[in-house]
Length: 272
Image 1 (cartoon, one colour):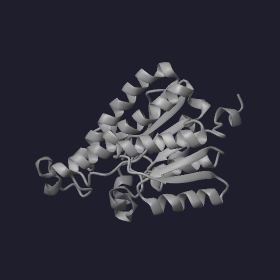
Image 2 (cartoon, rainbow, N blue to C red):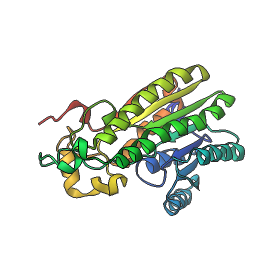
Image 3 (tube, one colour):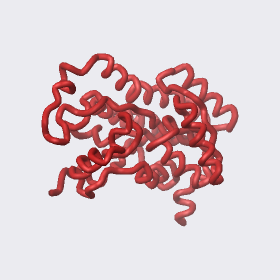
């Protein structure tokens, strides 16, 4: 098979949650730049509309819908609207997520009492788990009936290297939520394989996005986290495009339940 067939996503209908910026936008761009039909779901109405305009100006077929993924009824209605308007849902990027704040150890090696286990407010845990795991489950549950009816589908969840390792510099609530996402992806993949629905995850390392108030867009944070990574830099949203396209395309037809680490070697540990 030639490469233009192997990675072909032409005319596929793809939904991207949290598609207004960061990794979600990068995934949307990867699809739109390769002739897929893309719908952005985001609670940031202005940001999503702007992203859709900018991608459309470059020739993409991209629209935006204002949506909070923690609203199950709205999520189900939006999926149905896309299916009704475009005839099918081929690919869903379940990308929306939030930070839980810094971890219990700062990049300077000093413990932060505010982030100590017993001092993190219950509201923080609830917000992180509601967005990072419950909304992912809701996104899959809203997409799966459509994919079952059409006999195929691809679901790509934005997970994290935090799904498989402990993280002193990252909030415990975030790490716990991504651990749950890891098992959700594997469990869903096992159940849905019989319906020709592949479920996989992107597992980024530290990446410069708007999450956590754009914490990793700051030069000092990039330097600190970059020093912990063998490639000696943190990730950028565009670093996710190749893996996103792979998981959405025929190239990954026999891949399900996988976490594709896009982390500059972060999971390997600090080299020197």
